[in-house]
Length: 272
Image (tube, rainbow, N blue to C red; front, side, top):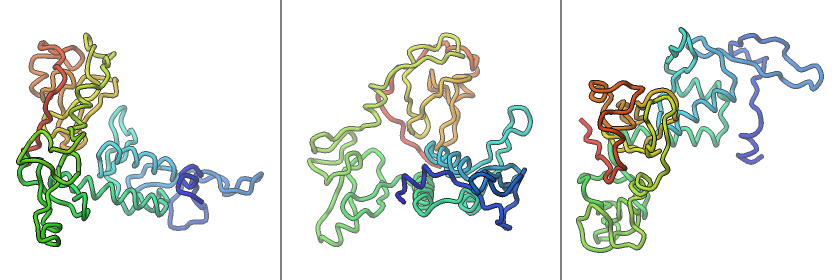
């Protein structure tokens, strides 16, 4: 069975599994198909999941740049449970396949690494290389340099062997070297925020003003968004941090300065 077939096949708990605590167990087997019915198992926080729903929720979190998994269940009106689930618990109750475990663990490692250091894989040896000078795209891989007994440098932006003079902060000499994130910021479509008065003609993708990560607005609720990487909340319209924006404006009204133009530079995260 292929990975795609495994993902399409519905996951089901075995009602005879004594290691799981089931909620509303019901009949163990379907009397017609003699197959297991969909059961819900209890997580450590007390809320119930199916293996499919748990897998899908955690995949969404990873896609949004989160490697800490929290329970989304509502407990008091719109307040979420927000209790942290361990990866070991998720792996067990989501019934992850080998391929899914590899995807989860590689994504979690990559996200955790990006939180603590600015690194990229060397295009030649694949070793993670940390960039010391955040304004210089020309980076040297010490592993390849040692093996070849000659300096090996690559472009942080296009991931090709460095070409041309350096240091440079805009591009190397390779054809097609460009900052794709910056190009996206300058060419993305515009949207409106239906619940924010006067919020039209807003670029659909913004770079977080603190760490530079690309962020989109779901066009629901207020104008503020939380960056999934640095966790700072900022206004999607004026690009100021929420605390600063809210001093002069309501979360549901356009800012006095209007909608900030498309960004022409991506902020560099100055980690403390």
